[in-house]
Amino acid sequence: MKGYKATYDMKCMGFTYEVGKTYSIDHMSICSHGFHFCSRMEDVLNYYSLGKQANGTNFVLLEVEALGVVQSQGISDPKRVTNKMKVIRVIPEEEYKHFRDIHVLNYSGYLIYDNVTKTEYKRNEKGMVLHIHNEGGVTYTIEYNDRDLITKQVSDGPLFIQTRTYEYDDRGNVAEFTVHNHCKENNRKTYETVNYSYVYDEKGNIVDIHEDNILCPFPEDRFRHTKRVYDDKNRMISENVIGSVSSSKVMEYDDNDNVIYLKRIYGDNLKVEYRITIE
Image (tube, rainbow, N blue to C red; front, side, top):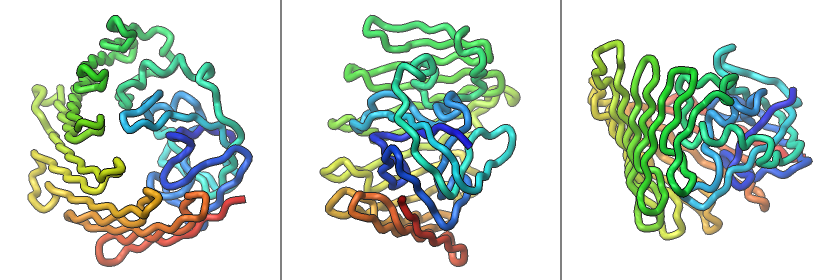
């Protein structure tokens, strides 16, 4: 099955992908572990923002072929996962650049991709997108700081309004990230407000994440704290999450920085453990 996979600097979920190589995993689960892709190019861009990122990495789109078992969450969800994938080629920007403006927000609520050519844009003097309106009934507005980093995104769709705000540290890393969702069917009452804060080490790795779901009615589910540990090659080797359901993750790598072993523990019982091979 042919498909498309997005990466940053050819990396995704601990893998450094190479054209022509085949990757296999002995256990897979959609949105958790395995090799994820979409059958349509435009659907892949639903999950990633294009171009150069705030952390200095660059978006790279791959054409891939699923050679093993393929799973999905249903017809309405374009994401797929397979236990065996071959990387065919790197897709040049010219083949997907007509999608790039829509995905500056990295948010696709109610977008109708078949009508992307009828989307209207407003830009500033630098060519950066300030306003987007499409026939799917969604209007986007974007604000930037003096470093051209996004500080606010508002997505106004048929059912709800989502507002995202960003604050950055001196190195351009996201330090605070807040999401507000307002449901139009309930007089635009805010039904979710989540705040994330990030701490980085001297090499730019995220070592600490605090998540606060401010309006969550269940106190035990409101907070989540994540701590990460990296080796001397800036590879994450462990992650511990403390919350209503705690979890932990341990990883091992080969000499090319690919994850070859991963173990996840959820709560007190569920454990997922698998190894990956590269041909």
